[in-house]
View (cartoon, rainbow, N blue to C red):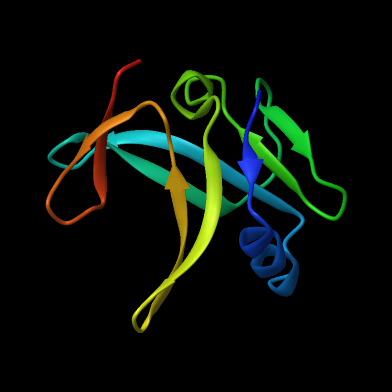
Length: 103
């Protein structure tokens, strides 16, 4: 499993003192899928990517959708958030919450 994390995202994860973060996708929204970003624990079938002071975990169903993505932390105006930069993402709904993939 190959997921990159930008320096900005690493700093924010360390500031929040998380030890494991689950990244994934779930069905929903008008474009078909929504991203998952949550503090969680490792479950059977998860891929675990160790980054030293924290780990990223991805369930087996989400792995093809997230392979090769980058997790970033961005500031846009007054908003700050973690952003999925995903080469498999082909479109998003107007609200920006729901996405679709070429996988």
